[in-house]
Image (cartoon, rainbow, N blue to C red):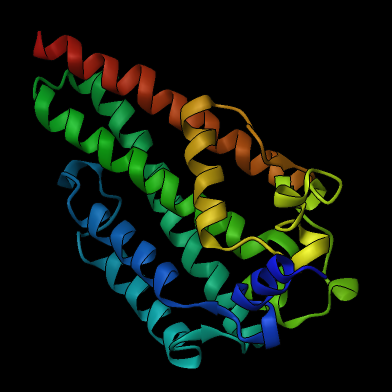
Length: 238
């Protein structure tokens, strides 16, 4: 192994099973909660603080068990983690549905407010699907750093690093096979951003049926937000 590969291995969360940092996921979750709190009341499926309070209650024990790095997991906490993402995702999709309903049936004239609400829904869509991909791929963030590669569940996504081992040396040094690389939250958020803007996979390909289904749902919801909602808001402004 070259010096570059050795250094890359040490920098990565899989080194000595030290786990992925908790803070980025916690911040992303809190941002999604705040974005939901800022939506107009007519786009909320429940009283304003009910769902955010539930999401915070789900987040607190997850932070408590892994306050700094994601190294421990039980079936209960795994269910809590997936449940948290599901609550955020469903509430945001419902908000999108109510937003479309307001446009089609309510004759909303507040173009600026509508544009802001659409942006909030779109940003939350990026965050929540990024978290969903992060939670599900290869068994989740704990498994990806704590379980030997040979025992990891099948991958839901194929990243460029997973097939770069035969590239030029400066690229191959960062490949999965060379430096034991696995994706972190940043990688999944990037996948979510590109899927929401290009409405299709870019350099990261979905492998499993559930990954393809989730990416399809995200693309359709992003397309609806971008074309139907924002276009209508701009037309109102004019």
